[in-house]
Image 1 (cartoon, rainbow, N blue to C red):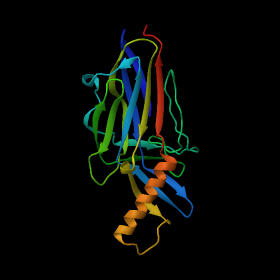
Image 2: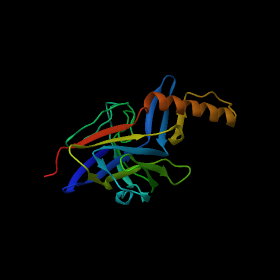
Image 3: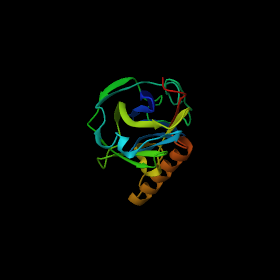
Length: 219
């Protein structure tokens, strides 16, 4: 995830978001899993700033970019590049970087539509992301899309952005070598939910990505 702030007026800063959703692979003792996200939540915490509801522009039914490039990574650290900001980089799993099990490929993805809804207060706005198709996960890219316009009340003005998920957002695409055979549908559902819960608590909490922006002044 990347977040960029561009000053446009003495007291206004336009925020642009880049976020890439991929299928992730994780090796576990005795097997492996592949999973994706059916949704997630972007939260902003503003200091000396506010975002009115009418200035939140990333809303509605939006198509993710159909083509994305999957790059092999030798690290499970979150990769973020934000000019003029500091970014924390934990935990090891993330929404925008492939794990080391994925090879270098450039794949054509089916069209995925994402429903984005905004809520929260002017100082703590929230964007909820959800895949519209029931049996798919989010795959694709929002590249430098306009998220919102921030009104600076005073300086320094800062933005803390986090992207996090809940248990309901995790969808197991493949489970290999971890489940015994001859399971009933209910037993399979219980075990898969347990795996998803373990994945959430150990890999995806407290958040997938976190970024901080600070503006000391607007010249």
